[in-house]
Image (cartoon, rainbow, N blue to C red; front, side, top):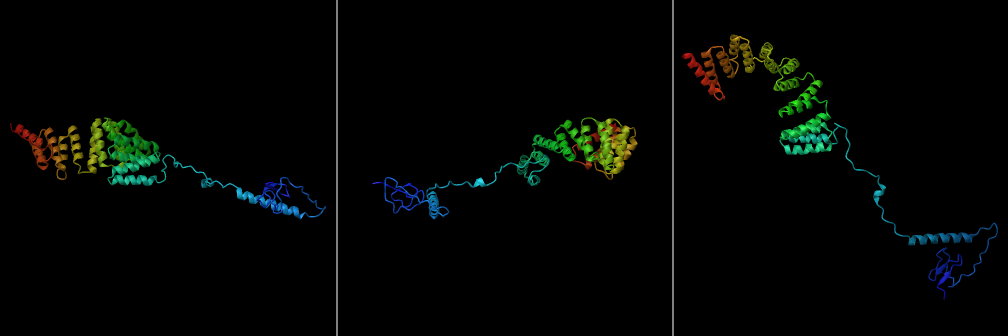
Length: 358
């Protein structure tokens, strides 16, 4: 017995249990099982007549095909939601040299706040992170350099400061601060160009003129120091401290008249300065004017400190007035008993008195 049915519409073989043709959907209920397909006579429609049977068969076939396709289609693979997202790339923000990165300023501010509060370790951590985030930020490197300096890590501190100078060459304060650090480390040759660069930007800065002058004095270059101090005096409006330094620079350069004039101007600006009075007295004594020197020192005794008694004793002794010098030394020791030279000056007074008595 045949195990299939032949569809009378399309001739497709179908299994016995199927009620409709798998290909065209034709009913197979009245189709006997058979081993061969029966001859199918297809009536041809008359010309101009509408073939309803063909339409019905076509619709049935399409519906069956869709039905079969839906029933036996494979399950769709799980879809990754990421394929619908725009591709992105994680990367650090790019900043121009000298431009703070996002949140950079707050990090630097936090580090400085910790530094001023005495938390050096916390400050170093915060500022190191700021520099790592943007090594082209001069402010971050400068702050980190200052923190390292206060923590005692001086070579590394200067390294950071020099890096900051390279990033911000138009910042005269940064250059001067770095120069001072170098001076304190004995690296004066490196400090001089930094001071000079700062002064090219702000040529009338009394502070930097004075600091560079001190560097030249330390190197034995008194004439260069005097030139800078003249500018500092002018820029500061006749500051007494600069005038005193100017007098000392002229003194070291061998220009005694200019030194005395500078000391005199300094004393006029600050009459209570014992140091300036003593220095001017020395210049007068060197110029062969001992009486003027003695008078000058005595004029300051009432308003000055005990150091003037020592200066008076020295001027009197070198002027040949031993007894008066001894009295001045004893008065100094009496007024300043804790001074390191109090005992030695008492002994000097005794020696002078003994020499005068003999």
